[in-house]
Image (cartoon, rainbow, N blue to C red; front, side, top):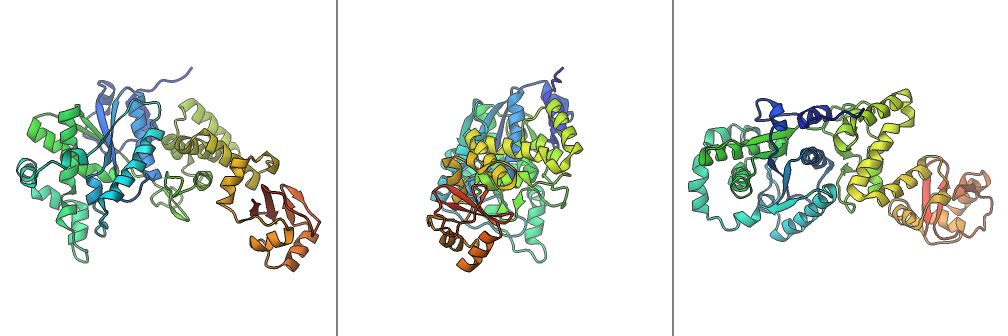
Length: 408
């Protein structure tokens, strides 16, 4: 019989519990609230898989009847959430606008099927006068609590690089978002990542002081790679982005396919919508034969499908099984070869010897002949022995075990 969890139970099971203003998390089950969650449009036109963890948490609130308001930070994006070590570089209004549109598209993809309201905090900040903001908002927040924040101490302490007044004021700006959305949309809950806890509490304080009402914050923990003890979410190439131009679907799929065994259970519960019964069955199968990486394969497919859609997920799955599994190259379709040509060396040369040299599978035609004689070159899964072979378009050429190129 399928087990039905309350929201608080599911958040605990999935590992989405960190700091909160609720005295008892079961309060979440008693009343459906309007919440907001946001991403700044500062650093890129894309979220990262770190943002995706918080987005998956937000999906659980939606599943349990909460009403979402998603914010793309056009105003906060101009300032940038303060880092511990240095001032963020200034970005132009055009860059922020472009970034914002990218984030909105990802909201629409990740939360597809849900009834969403999306807002941009620039819409209310653009008309606020500086003096009015200081008098109505600045006077409500004491300097002591702002100076006590870790990023301020790190930046202004010995060896720190200092902090501008703009970044110092970031908490007031984000706090005002909460106040504005409370007043205009009835928002009484902000969801955030662990790094935004203090900024979010500023909004709670504003609502308490200016509106004499209670509002709440719920944060999710930082996701840690248990194998390394470091923050989860980076590949050898760097940050894993949701934008296909910044991290290709193939590379995203490979990232999830290669996550550590120690953390796979956590990643499944955080980054997919797997239910407890299916999770238990999958983990039992995985632990019986970890070399088969059944859990990682499930994770890779489901996250890629969520971010890029079913067709793309099926494509990168096929490609991966051909390159690193036992699937036949003949099963690849035109779209697969298009994806492969951006990931692997490629050439339109038909002469096999010239092709091998041009794609750096070999150093010379002489070396190419030796590899062919040794049976080390295959085309679409078939070993070749003809030095004068003319390659057909959309062919996958392989040297040895793991060196590939594409004939386009």
